[in-house]
Length: 159
Image (cartoon, rainbow, N blue to C red; front, side, top):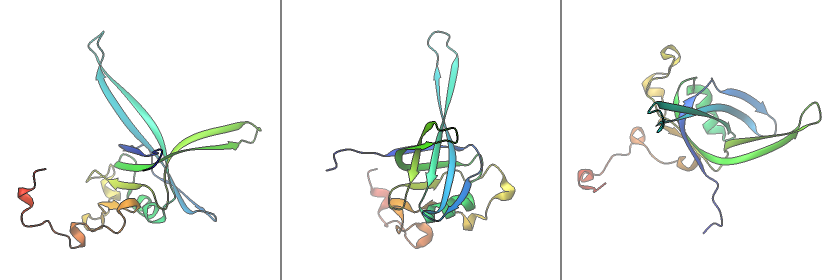
C-alpha cells in the first residue's frame, strides 16, 4: 500500500478554450481553466449563495491532449482526474513565483467529456466522432462503441 495519495477529481465547466503549446521536451501540452461551483443557503439571511473556484489543469498525455484540443470548448462540462503539482519559477523581475495545477501526465489521470452538447453547437463534432472518455488509467478499456456489450443478466446486478 502506498504511503500517501495525490489524486484530484474535478467536475466542472471550461472557462475558456484550451491553450495549446508544443514543446520539445514534453511534446503537445494543453492548459485548461476549469470552474467548479458550490451553492448553499446562508443560515443568517436564508439567501442562496454561490462560490466558484477556478482550477488550472495541464495535460501532458499526448492522447488526452489530442482529444482536448479537438473537442473541448469554453462552457463544456468535463471530468478531470489528475495529481496536484506546484511549480516554482523566477519571473522577469527576479521574483520567485508559484502555481499549483492539476496535472494529467503520461501514466496518471483521465479526462471525460460529460455534456452531450457543447456551448457552441456549430463547433461541435458529429455525435459519431465524440469520444466518451480518453487516455489515462482507462486507455485500452473497451466501450459500447468498441464492441463491448453488457451481459444478458445485467438487470440482476444489485447495483
